Image 1: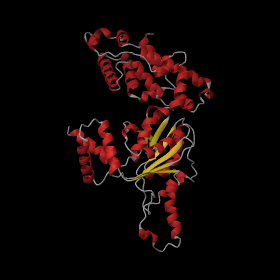
Image 2 (image 1 turned 90 degrees about the horizontal axis):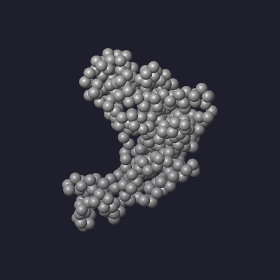
Image 3 (image 1 turned 60 degrees about the vertical axis):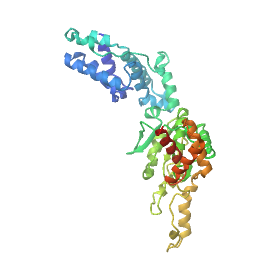
Length: 411
């Protein structure tokens, strides 16, 4: 049996890691190897399609890295058990299947383009076309597959630290259609890019770091004026600490009733999750705030130890209330008002991001101008920044960033 035929059989019989066939490169690679028994037209088409998807995934310089990275992020019985720290409790038949799949994946990426061409039965019919077919490099596998003796232990250690499947590959997620879906291109803002509000931000950071270290943290409400960096703070914290096992799932407020389903997905994982609810507010008629109260405290589906809730709002008391609401024929109106106000009290920590005064606003502008090397006199910078803020309806870090971007564009 030649090497290519053996590779086809090994790939066909993958078991624990058969989920890699859901990815484009392994799927196209299998079609190429299976085309060894086809005519030259089918073979050349499969070759071209495989090379195209390999280039799309930046794998033409290392097929080994592409295939092993795909396997590394596969969610299966072994990766789930390893993430939970119970992989040694798996039956020996499963662990043997993992070892066998690792062997098969190594055989797959070790095949060179020349080996495949030379073993193609109709090689002579290809003529000069064979010389012009695009070639890829086998390259080196990811670190976890590099040690042939300890690969299974290296994989288990990776899953214990990083989780498995999408939770190992991505840092940001959104709850949609009853499932956790990855955010392919999350906001990349960093803490170093945020100016002002150091005291408020450090409060949230300290709470997050305690949470990451296994100390019980508080659910946190970031409230205050628009454009002051509440949402940016939460996203920047994720970008700063995701390498320490922090992940974030954004949940729309109208999906809070599905919180028990989300808990089932993330509670067993060895990661820390921030459930992010952005721009939170309710009208008094919107009784869905009761769902959030249950999530924060009092529901049957308890918030797991690896989860905190961070919410942002423009209001300290999240439920909108008018003066006229205090009148009316409700016999127990005070109880109704207290129920409305109790929602914000269920957050263990509330951090106020209020609109900056003129001096604070200009400090933010100056710091941003320095960071982006904006060459202007301080007098001109401050005058134009104030004019910009007036035209935009008020001072805020958002207005400061927009002003700096506008001035950069004029350079």
